[in-house]
Length: 426
Image 1 (cartoon, rainbow, N blue to C red):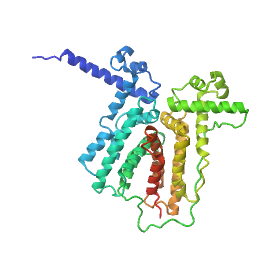
Image 2: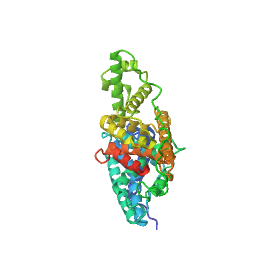
Image 3: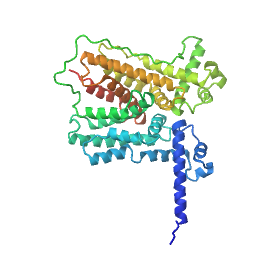
Image 4: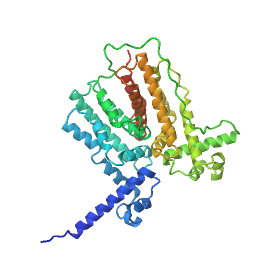
């Protein structure tokens, strides 16, 4: 006797296949082109269906994005951490989850892109990502509390604080690995951090020598300004107009991303014609370089900065800069977050800038940690190169979390907590 599927079941299976094809096509497009720059017509063409056909399954692009994110959220960090914790209480499974993530095609690229792009409250994925961070912090806090109860994490660790910091560093590592694959191994870094949590805060070998009386020279911070520097020369009206254009471009790049912002958009925001804008900047690429130069100049010229006598004190002072940036220049953090994630593709106009910047920051922090170890401030069991990568990732990740929930995450407080652990005082 031959049985045939009911027409309704056939239609259901066909519908699921079509929806899956749409979500897969949307994922590829969002990763390679960005959410804002991708239209529903682009997704429909990539999925091999008509635009009206796509609208029968998804009424809006926001619905498509939600389906893409939901696909990756199934059996991801939250569920895996919870399951691993229940199967093996006391085990920190961050590195195992990262190992699984690396096997999922497109996972790292999608979340690296979304982390920055969705940091502006107007982005349709902002709420999704904000809620994801909150759930991950809560779940991770539970995991660390259980590990403390099982004596696999030191009893003096703060579960909630460690949960914020490990999630932040994890995000930062995922982005850093896109720019510096030769220096960043996400799984290895998380394994190293898991091991360090078993030690008391600020631990060092009992017989280690303390700080020296004659500290090593403190390495100076290199400048990361792009070649296209803004000249202070020229007529006052021209300088003021350049400043307005830079402010308008910075705001739009933070709100809409570089790829989805046109010169005409910037001209309209500033209140000048496109031809007037082109009188000052020949292309959008030149304007982008000027925005990055402008940002770096403002960040690097903090009035409150004073060089320290010891490398450890130079590192401990980083939180003051974070506090000042958050209070006085949140827009500079926003544009940095959006552009650093958007520029992951090698053909992006800002990719080389961020690759050079990340490499320079890691090099600088590594030199500081080496000097601190030479001074006796960094315990001998800590590796300066690892600490430099982790600190860079942590700072960036904390800034992303702050952009999603400014009341829940204090970047400076968490930087201080981390550095107090790494550079214990005597």
